[in-house]
Image (cartoon, rainbow, N blue to C red; front, side, top):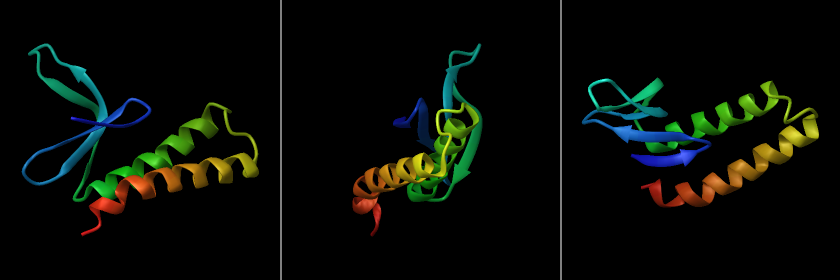
Length: 88
């Protein structure tokens, strides 16, 4: 599994990337809470950036449009650097 942001991880099977918060089930297998599925890692990371911003707004950690835009820009720049190598 790959840690992405804010406790969210990505895993994969033979067809897709799976993103969510991991937990260990009763059978001792690691699973994801509220899993989301993507065909590319870039899609997965973009989804998480949007979700992360939404969670900050919901928690009232972001309360102005300026704060939202600043945080969105920071996330975009951070992930752009990380994802440049994925663009093949």
